[in-house]
Image (cartoon, rainbow, N blue to C red; front, top):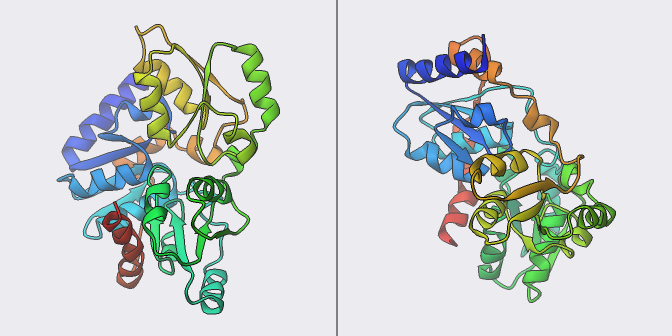
Length: 306
């Protein structure tokens, strides 16, 4: 089968089986083209909750599918490729967080959305990369433990110096692999380009950027900017997606580093999606009621705080 034929069958199966297909922005273009919604992880879970379909297929990683299930417990949620995990989401041990909370009862635990459902059950509030600064500013003047991404935590701490924020050692291994030398090389190769980076990059890389923001914010900035050359400091798929979005605008996009490739995002193929919709692949996300209720608490707090 050709890519077009597979896409056409996926479109037919979605209609026949009343399925909502979600694709994270880091997915391959051929998957994004057949998705009902594409974007950042939390953005997708909100879209899924509002969608009329009773079955949702996530083309992304496991914690994203879990978040969909937390917000839509009545729906059947499938992960297109069961092997698609997230090292950062699994870095922090739940028992460690419980120990810290016991030792520091006034400490508020702020969890990046990139965490497992199980870990969310012991956290006070969830944040996304785009909402983290805003939400932390609104928290009471208590100690804050920011998990699991120390790079995003460091970025937030610099934007909100009045808060006492502590972090554990964790982060996205893909974004952490980028160095200031990569920035130097990219600036030499593309001297007229603006550097747009994700706050999951290390502080020394973030300090060199022209713009820092979430995946969606980076894409929005590049699309609306009057500038026409950009170095993209996040997963390499965003370079491709921006190239498609900006055809005819005379804009050029370059990856900050060839190492910005997430194998967990790349593991899901168009054929995986097809097999999942046929009922021959994928994996259903099962969460018990207690986990859903406890994990939902920190997400509801995020919504409350804006």
